[in-house]
Image 1 (tube, rainbow, N blue to C red):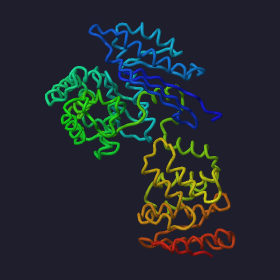
Image 2 (image 1 turned 135 degrees about the vertical axis):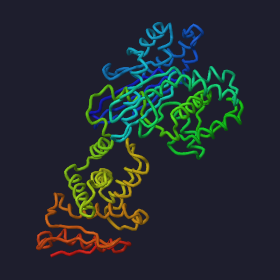
Image 3 (image 1 turned 90 degrees about the vertical axis):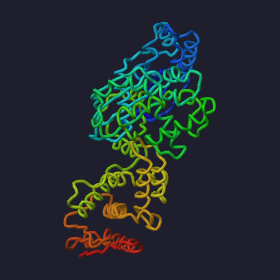
Image 4 (image 1 turned 60 degrees about the horizontal axis):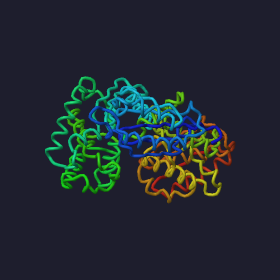
Length: 491
């Protein structure tokens, strides 16, 4: 942590104020602390669009607490931004002057377009690099942002004055949940968002993401009730609406996964989300991580590698656990070469195989004894941005099985693609036993049958590398106890 930079983002949203503190190291930002208070400032605008004294007092009290936590931070490493409610408030200067003093840092009221761009940056910071066109939709308390981008570039941005707090107050003012209220709210939402079709027409993106409060609340609720993990579907939205209609009043809504601070505004948020699905012809959206606060944090640093989240995560783990970088790269490159010999028509070896080679010794910092088990545990339980739980599980199995008996990864070995990756990794570790790059000239790995491999070495290889030859014989014996066979032709 000696070279880490402490960063902080403060988000003054319409529903909640949030403080995100991150540690920037190895081209990544790792969460250090997250504070959230449900201020509901969006509900504190009166008919003249002035913040009430009560709502300002709630906001000031929250920011005073945030300010205490931020004392001593470098002003260059802190940014506080306010969104739609303070864009609308006529007396915002009164609130912001006092709020900035209590926080200890200036507060900026950003435009809807800048908010959208920061949201996109935050979302892609948690996604692997890709050329796909991404649609990101963020339904906040009083505004909804649409962003269409590719790689790190937000190509089209738009902000609309519609959100969970505003729509709940307008169409469910007494908390009554009726079919007519939902119909009216959705029709009104589609009317506001209709102009989005001019820019965000169906077919202009490859994958759609929903981010921030409403998306997380709906996604968590659906997942907790068996309606999809990390995904919002049209069927899931229909199911959630039926649950709300059955409750008849917001005070009687009791659903697993729905947090108490989100329950009062879920009806408005759901109405806007359903309108988005209908308007854009969506069947599903992935729930994105990151969003505005992470975009603000990454905006405080200038790093060309921010977009390559997998590489940054792997590099960070290697450095954090003191991995011997040169040896790890030798193993990764050798494993990839062996895979390419088995798949000569494929342009690249699987990235998972390279990651496993780079990370197979992360457990050595814990103990050299059974380090492969420590490595697997670390990887399966790490906070690894960009990696899905399934990817971490596969990575852990590769690392666990890279040495020793193969019975411990028997189920993993039953999947041919996984088995071949593991066998290439094991052979690479053997060939790199001297912790130097092996001489691969004339060494050839071939597939002889569905589960049969042949490894041929050039003349005199076994005499030049007697230890490697012995380790390969032991490896062939270990593999023979599975459904796979490795035949050696060594001279």
